[in-house]
Length: 311
Image 1 (cartoon, rainbow, N blue to C red):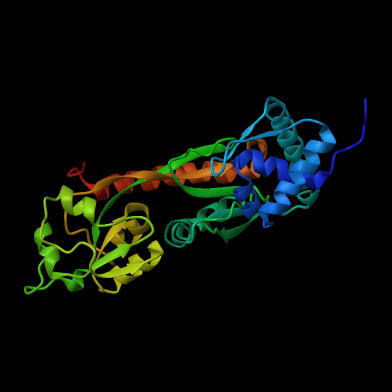
Image 2: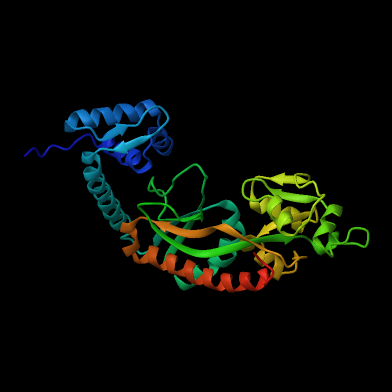
């Protein structure tokens, strides 16, 4: 039996393409061109003497052949072994470094205010926070140990732990409420500027649930980051649809108020995501367990804030 190794760069490309089932997405995750991915896959298939992918028509993506399905878990396992061995060598020093990716708004408004408790409990761990790009997969690139993601939890091939759910409801600064511009009932929103989190939420569903009509739901200020929407609401620029986890601290401090009882469930939640191989790392496990406990504490507070008038 041949003991020669196939081209290692081609194996990296194969693992990315097989994970995404897309040459385009593999190219984006590896920061190379689609043509380069196609070339590497072709070279690997020629080296192995078998086809690894079925090309399913134009625009329909890829499917693994039987050989590809057999090959993928072994290659992924080999890469995880290399990552673990590398981490063991790099982390043999006394101080461990834990790299954590998170979306910027969640990092700013939820994670950072609580992070000190983890650091005090684990003085031998240095935490590096990476504000993740929505289009980048820092976990797949090996840039982080844990990725805090916002979604439905459907990330295959990874260890996914949901630690916090949230609801959506209007919030504002108490300073914007006057006799001329009251907020006694949802219909009073017509007197106020609506603030929009254009990447995540909109007002249509909440206004419909509240039975409010006659309000131009698209009017007002829009922002592409949730922390900017929250900051604008604190500044008194209007009424925002607050995402529970991101506005809870401001509500508790009195920087924001929740003028109405009605809250809507959000289909997305916060998850701690890591590779299956890394969950045995005590440092990764410690941070994940800490997220679960902090999430439990926050969940209790969020449930109390959201109230009972919800869908």
